[in-house]
Amino acid sequence: MTDLPTPSTQRPVPGQLTMSAPRRGKPPRHWADLTVDERAEAVVEAGLPAFRAKQLSTHYFVHHTDDPAAMTDLPKAGREELVRGLMPQLLTPVRAITADNGATIKSVWRLHDGALVESVLMRYPRRATICISSQAGCGMNCPFCATGQEGLTRNMSGAEIVDQVLAANRMLKDAGPVASGEGVELGAESGEGDEAGPVSGTRGSDRVTNVVFMGMGEALANYKAAIGAIRRMTDPAPHGLGMSARSLTMSTVGLVPGIDRLAAEGIPVTLALSLHAPDDELRDELVPINTRYKVDEAIDAAYRYFQATGRRVSIEYALIRDINDQAWRADLLGEKLTARGKGWVHINPIPLNPTPGSRWTASRRGVEQQFVERLRAHGIPTTVRDTRGSDIDGACGQLAAATA
Image 1: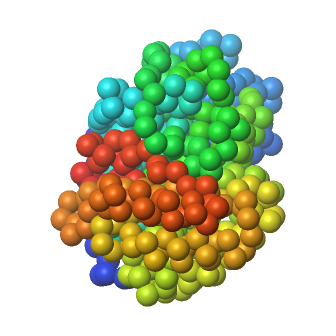
Image 2: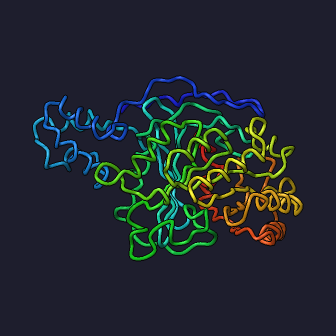
Image 3: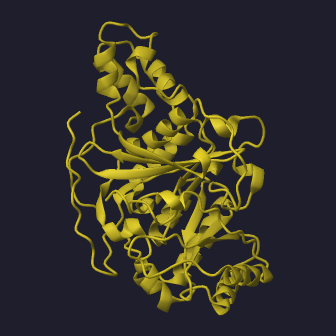
């Protein structure tokens, strides 16, 4: 494949939101973009009986392969052309970087038009979590996030989103067990313990058990593709990956209409609201979408999501030294959340991960502990999140720092 130039994206000015993705050439149509009926039609159009569609789905979604040579149950004549036509290569590996003794792998992928995206695979003793991207870049422009500072290149297709999970499954196929780490595992943000994934045997080390939309992009700003990807992940095998919706986490900076739309889908994924400040004055600066949807509006939408789905919501809160880590802000956050009820929310404080050129850094350990204790005093389950991959720019807020 000829190397494509990395498309340039003009950096947004501080506070500028990009709600509509730039128009670019569409990714090639892929098997994961099609419904079951559309797959059957595609196979018939290729001159084969419709039952071959199930075989193709089994190879892709169950065996995690798009290699024609592995599909020996398909007719040899024309097999290569059929598979390449229906499962074109969407992600071209650029490089993979490991950390945490091999338990964390950041992958850099080049898309068909040269755009770069990243995903991070995190292996735990009982789970394997993939942090996936939904956009090349991001239009939300949060000043402490490397991805947001690079701007938005384009939306990803549903198949490009799903293919990150398949690529991770291929990586895990021959991987061995990993040692336990500190902090709450990414993919178990809601504090639900065993409910979020398998807890025995080696299942957690040989395939992806949890998916979090916490990579590059704001998934709710690419709603149609993100929901399509979720449906492919949760569709029963062999028509999809057969994952539980409860093992998927949708992260958002607070697009209120998108949260309400997601609540109406009837798919009980976990919602993670990236709040980062409980007061509008500071959140307007840290999370520019707050200029459209204020703190209380975002929290109200999250609470409606809980009411509609019964799924406990996660509040993500990056602790930034001397910026948002004051005890009074912990109290204000606790008061706002408990005013809406008890037992509906869990908080994940996250020590801020460094990004190049940023003037901000993580809170002091003692300040972090006091912040956590003040939240717990309000009766809210609070767990400091594991920060995997910070030394390879693979942790929360760091994606695109080294590749854009």
